[in-house]
Amino acid sequence: MTFVCNKLMGLALVLILLSGCTSISKEQCQLGDWYQIGVFDGQQGKTSMAADYTKDCAEHKANVDLAQYNKGRAEGLKSYCSYENGTLIGEQGKEYQKVCPANLSSQFLEGYIPYFNVSDTENKIISKKSEAARYKEELKDTSLDKDTKSYIKSSFKTAEFELSELQSKLNQYEYELAIHKIERKEAQLLATISDKYSSDAAQAHAKEQLVEVRENKQIIEDLYVTEKSIRDIKNIIDLF
Image (cartoon, rainbow, N blue to C red; front, side, top):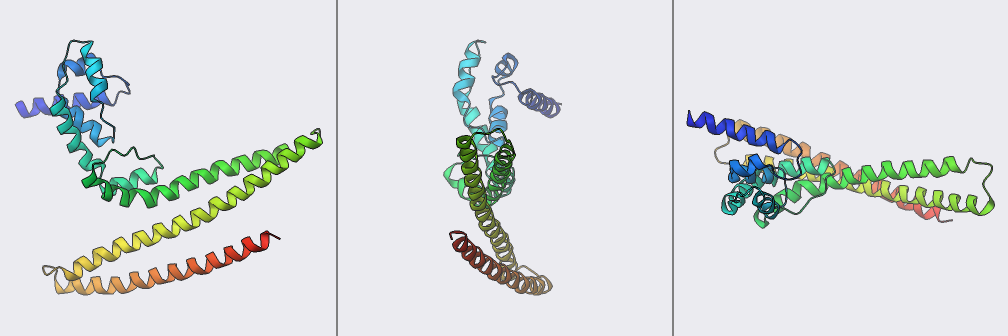
């Protein structure tokens, strides 16, 4: 019965926290399940809210158990700061708030950085395309005076150049992400091959996959070098 009650209280707490309130409620302060509040904040990748909670709960004559809150938040950060979650946060283009402790940050960033670089650059390209399109449309206005038209034309060329730079960055980041994925797969296959508890069949299959993965890696590397050379030549030509 106690277990069920605790589960229900935990569910109620999560629902309250998800309600979108920016400050902690009177009910949360009085409930005082600071460990669970900490776990939730950690899982959401929040910076410590201890100071805010202390201030808000003081208005309701309730105290914050900082030890339990910090313990819960540390536990919650274990799931937030995983490699897998890093890839998800990066893919969504969300800024990292540097909440992961030193012993967890490297695995989080390993997943976060390559995915974020691609997502963030894609979003910047969308924004820059919209800006360039706006300038292009403004140039159609036949009533523009000479100076205004010159300014808009210059702004359009700048936007086009910046768009080209962003596209080059995206190509680089996509290449880095592809290599990152391949190297992760390569490491997993090598672990299977070197695992003495893996069956002969599993090791043989891993060796076959490893050959294929390394061939694909070489193809991607060769293509990237070729495409980069072509882009460099084009950039030189565009200068004239």
